[in-house]
Amino acid sequence: MSTRVPSHTRGRGANLVRSNVRLGSNGRVRSLFPERSPLAQPTPSAKDRFLAFRPFIGPGAIQFWMGPDAHLLHYAIGGNADYVNFFAVVEYPKVWPHADKWLDSIEPGEAAAAFAGWHPAVVEMVAQHLPVRWGLFGTRPLLNWHRGAVVILGDAAHAMLPHHGQGANTTIEDAITLAELLPGTARDGLGPMLAKYQSLRRARTRKIQRSSWITNSLLHLPDGPQLAERDQRVARFPEDFGWIHQFDALQTAHHATQAQRHPAPPHA
Amino acid sequence: MQQTEIETAFAELVENITGTQPARIDRDLHLDKLGLDSLSKIDLAVAAEDRFGIAIPDEDLERFVVVGDLLDYVHRTTA
Image 1 (cartoon, rainbow over the protein chains, first blue to last red):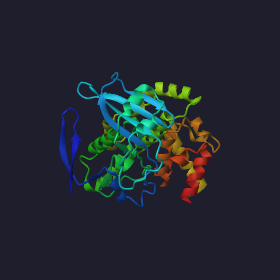
Image 2: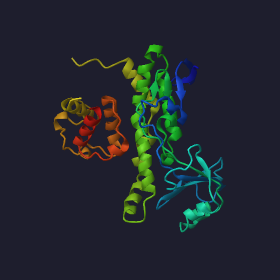
Image 3: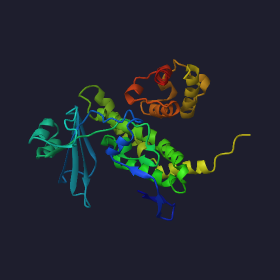
């Protein structure tokens, strides 16, 4: 199977090139790499996620509510911001009980019980019956993202907790990187090209994966003296996470291809 | 892989990532003195994985305090 990959042409829109590279982006592709990816086991941890839509009940800002072993995030969505999307995350069950599904039903009142005693706004949001919980999973970092003409990206390569909102974004970054590197690559140059793709993407995505876990702990701290430091860190989120949001995948890949095509002359 | 080989290659990786001259790197040097925190340590771990062909899981990486911890890990896992 050949795959059409958009080729970014600066200032001239996008076109399509035909390639013989096979792309994989969901978790099942991991089975292609069993012996070279000893760490590719699902992390045995899961968290509940309740997702629902509610009439807009507050200001349009993104808002976090943090407490022991749980947090709730809500933000306005829709063309006129007339809905609020919220999700509530709790730390149980630590081990997801289902091997074959990532959605599960919850008992009426279970979500409300998990947030009993929280701020009235939170209590109101979770008071309705939320019929489903989502297990949240990550994968351990992989060593190899390609073999032959097969390459993985997105969740297949670096599934992560959603606390930085980067699951889809990093997948797009992967795709942009491949699209920038792929054009003009001869069949016998695929290996080095895919190795370059991996080298451009692996450290960054692993850091976001790790940072998502660190942020999970920060959001779920118990009451105590650590909260003052937590509040200071949350206030610095825009600056501290600039490395995530200000990254330019296209420019990074473009510079890498230019450096490869026009290496600097050796020092005299 | 010989210990001295590992130390030489490792010092190059550290220099590439932190700009620290190899002569300043010794086993007892704290990783945070190299300007490496829990996230930037990942840059070093990924470079070491690629260089030495090993895996350094996050949970092991978190336990490394000084340069020698990483060197010993690389030596053990490449033996």
